[in-house]
Length: 213
Image (tube, one colour):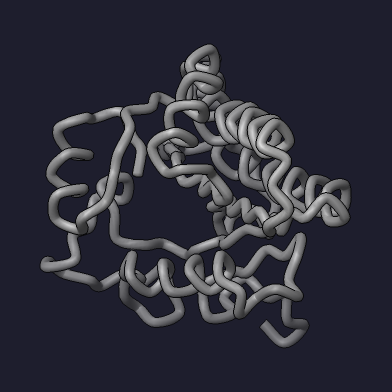
């Protein structure tokens, strides 16, 4: 696992018994070293999950500042773009013949129009996922995305042991990270070997554009 807060990483790694490396996805210059270190730590990398993301919840188009725009694009799109680039370069260097999996965490907002940076970054991410999947399928890569609805996280201000009521979701409750993680694990496993370039929207059909809405 990776993230900006090393103390959080350390305690989480101890809890689930895994390895960790600090990483700030806005610091693109650190990516090559990070991927090299991960490759050594794991005895070879074959999987990347682009999970970092922020939303600054602007009220609308006219309330977006340049700093807010840049911060969200740097974290949600630029970081994922160049980290994936470093990962693919490392896999080429290793010349491994095993299947390589890349998973992006998009959002349900990626499937609808938006005027704010968060939604725009996720729509662009979906295009990137499908473009990369088509480009690299014959090189042994599977590249997919999950697009969750509103899920318990610090970003949305909800806690799993608190009030889960959420009128925005079909279920009228926040989704739990574990529910989304199950879909992520499926896409990273051999059980989904025939899936490539797919964006699985995890919101129980809420954003389907049905004519009888």
